[in-house]
Length: 210
Ligand SMILES: Nc1nc2c(ncn2[C@@H]2O[C@H](COP(=O)(O)OP(=O)(O)OP(=O)(O)O)[C@@H](O)[C@H]2O)c(=O)[nH]1
Image 1 (cartoon, rainbow, N blue to C red):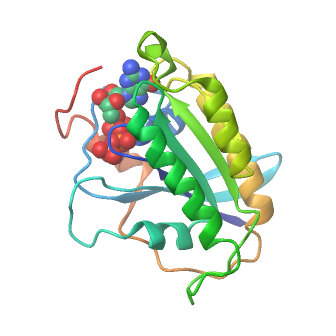
Image 2 (image 1 turned 30 degrees about the horizontal axis):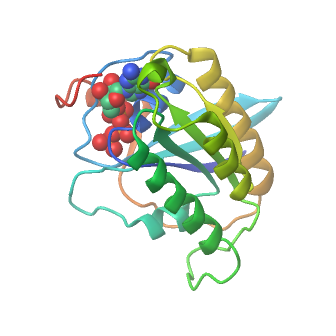
């Protein structure tokens, strides 16, 4: 069985948990707890191959044992970098993350816990497309950044587009399972959660409404 490790990165409130929950449960639930970082594990069959998938959902709030962005990047085989199309600052943060991923995987990494992978799969996602009346980041800017980071680009809405979210994750897992083959085991950034426990995170915390 192929192990696939994907880190879902991006600034606070861009919809990282919403995208993961949507993919794993098909549901969009308005509010998610974000007081702990976790890894969701799932076994999937993709193109006839069995994959053991780990999706890392980092915690934006200060929390115990919180991993650094560098650790998250070293741990993962593939990356989904998310920004909110209605929030320019989240795009600027996504840009910095894309550049850091390519820098750390360019071969100059000092880490002993991972092998650099210049072709690590990178998917840039402009989320909250349903808020396009409040758009602050154009589709072209997203496409340009994805090209700059040698990644794929998606603009979608975790709230409204299950099919697109599922397609994006499937393509990401497909790419990652190809390039991530043979990597040695790395330390998990933090605790893991089964999909069954995912629902416990829901309604954990009230946050900004959209
Ligand atoms: N309108 C709209 N709201 C969304 C969408 N995706 C997520 N949200 C909302 O955005 C807010 C933040 O979503 P989360 O999934 O918690 O974002 P996050 O990136 O995991 O946030 P942190 O855990 O704090 O880093 C919640 O109120 C969600 O309901 C979307 O596609 N459209």
